[in-house]
Each structure stands twice: as structure tokens, then as C-alpha cells.
Length: 535
Image (cartoon, rainbow, N blue to C red; front, top):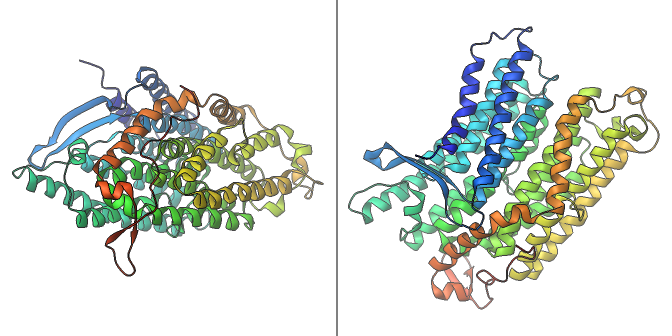
């Protein structure tokens, strides 16, 4: 019997949270509490690296599969597995969690035990979302991760933390209810087609023949839930409030991992389960993504608060990911998955740096800073590298993902690629302008003159981010080779199930109708040439 590595990834953070219950939450015990949580999170990260080392990058199949009956009367099972799309998102989760804990080592002073427990429970739930292959199990993890994040924002956040936490939970749970109805509808359809046998098994539901009208409604239910999580314009309004009010650790995990669950859901569930509806709605999702790219960049440009600027940059950057998915060719999908990882590293790093500055000055207003290069040169140097990785400088991680997405979008519709390319320019404008105002020029405030440079703990927190940004930019094939087979399989699943007449023609809506009518514009090629990055 093989070692259940995915189950151990799920259980280990929970065991760590339980172990913390046996330590009294006193000031004297705080170092021990933080150390236990940190050790557990590091062990989880090491286990994700072991999973990656044992993963077969040439296979598109789900690997390390575990299946056990859970509620057999309704066809619900504990069914988990990973492929090239979910594998590296697991590694990203394991990578960012100990960094988030370290970042809050000195900034969280009250209820440290509860804080660490919520971080560990959140990690377990996020891992569950990426490994679940039973839709009911996926929904359980999808909603479970909202609870610890709600408390992290509501208890350890800033002045308007309760408002931000309630807004976060209402938005995300509201969309989840519609997805639950669609999941139940899929199980009912399976029972109707298979003699009353219910199933939430994703691999079985892929083969289910879903009537076209139901595909449209089910796709909308899934897509709305995922669009809120991304967040896709115009469902993004909860994100700036949540980021601004969350503690640094919450912002890192929210931006670094949780937002990716929306885009992950699109490529894992919405598109392959409902290919006809996905082909119909792809241009509309792409249009919203393009609006988000430009809108998020323009709004970020005028933000006075560094944290809110980074939050709106997420709206813009994740628009690229959605655009790559909707292109549904190998460059677009592979670039989208890679960009999920890039965004987690770059934006997570930006929130860590902003948190370090906020801990020193207790303000995030850009106008309160200036001339930091003279007083904290090492901090500014790290800040500069992460800023360049966020705007996609060649040689750093952001370039490869954005380039592949733009290439995939160009092969689908050159006009979309042109609009999206403007987002790259705007990203450089608002990020470099913010960096210049914060770090260059004269020291504008006497409080800035005495700012400390990076300490040992902060080096341990930020150095892995910088190393990952450089590694992903210089050796992208280390990551892309695992993604490619699974991305190609998703594309084939979508294309194979779409009727031939829709494969040959783009589907556009007739005026005032939800009935698709052909338009003689070609879709992107099904798979297209191999990625530019060699095997």
C-alpha cells in the first residue's frame, strides 16, 4: 500500500492546529506557539516538494489518487488526486504559508495561538480545494477556507476589519450557493442517466452528456462563483477592502493562493464540464478580463495607499489569467497556470514588503515615505526586484506567463491581445511610479530617517521570494513541463465535446437571445504548436 501523501498534506496542518490547543495562550508561550506552527508549515512545504519530486511530468493523468467511500448512498466519496495544473499550486501554498507566519512573528501580539491555528486550518482547506476530485468534497473545502480567513481579517485586521470581513464572506458565499445548486444538478443528471446512481466523481461527470440548455445555466453558476473569487470585473469590489484591512499574513495568503482558486476552478471544472457553454461565453469572459486588466491598472495608478495599489494590481494581473484560459489553446492555458504561480510569488512578495514598511512606520500612505534608498538600501533593493517581477521584466517570473498568455490571446483574436498588452505598459507605470515616490528623492519625513534595514528574520522571509522570482524567470521549463500535458488534456476535453459546427465557428449570441448562432470567425486552433519553451 502506497503512502497516502495527499491525505497527510491535508491532515498535518490540522494536527498542528490541534497540538496548539495544548499550549496555553500566554505571553510566555507565544514563542513556542509560533515555533510549533512554523515547524508544521515547513514540514507541509517539504512534503509538497516530495510530491513534486515523485510526480511524473510526462503524464496528463491524475496521480497519487486516493479514493474512499464517504456517503455511499449519495455517491459521495473522499476522492483526491493531482495533475500538472494543481501540483504547483500545492507547492505554492506550502511555500507561502511559513513565510506568512514568519512575517507576522512580531506584528501579531494578541491571541497568537488562535491566529496560528487559523493559518494552519486555512492551509489545510486550501490544499483540499486543489486536490479534491469529488465535487461535493471540493465544495466542502471551498467553503471551509472562508471561515479562517473571515476570522483572520475580522480579528487581526485594521480599523474597518469587521466591515471588510463581512463583505468578504457575503460575496464569496453568495456565489458559492449557486455553484452548490449546479453541483447537485450534475449529480441528479448522473442519477437520471445511470439508473438512479448519484455521483459527484469529477472523472465520471466529464463523460456525462449534459443538455445544451442546462450547460448554459450550470456554467453560469460555476463561472459566477469563480469570477467572484478571482475577482473578475465587476465582482472585484470586496477585494481592496479585504486586502487593506487584513493583516500581512492574511493578505499574502489571500492574494498568493486564495484568488487562484477562482481561475483554477475555471480551468478544472467550468470549461471541461460545460464545453458548449464555455465556448459560447468565452468571448464575454475575455471581455470582462480585458476591462479588468485596464480598469485595475488605471485605478491602481491613483491609489494613495500602497496596499490598495497592490490589491488593484491583482485585479489587473488576474485578468491576464482569465484571458489565457478563455483563449483555450496550449499557450494561453499553460501561460495562465504559470501566471497563477507568478502572481502568488510577486504579489505575495509585495504585500510582505508593504507589511515590513507598515510595521516600521504604522502607515501605508505613499505620501508619508520618500528617500528610503538612503536609509534602508537592502530593503529597497529587494523591493525593486519584486517590483520588476510584478511588471514582467524579462529574466524574472512575470515575463514568461504574460508572454505565453499574450501569444495565446493573439492566436485567438489579435485585438484582445492588443488591449491586454496595454495592461503591461500601465503596470510598469503605476508600479515604478509608486516605487520612485516611496524610495527615491530626499528623505521627506524625519521618521523615515531612522528606519531600520532588513533584519535576520525579514531576510529569511523575503529571500525565498526573490529566489523564486529569479528561478521561475530563468528556468521556466522546470515548471512548464509539468503543466503542459495536463493543459493539453483540458483543451482536448473541451474541444472533443463541442459539436463540430461549433468547433469550426466562433459562437456569438444573436441579438436579445441566449441561443448561440454561428459567426464565420474561426476559433483558435485546438492545441496548436508546442510551447515556445523547449522540453
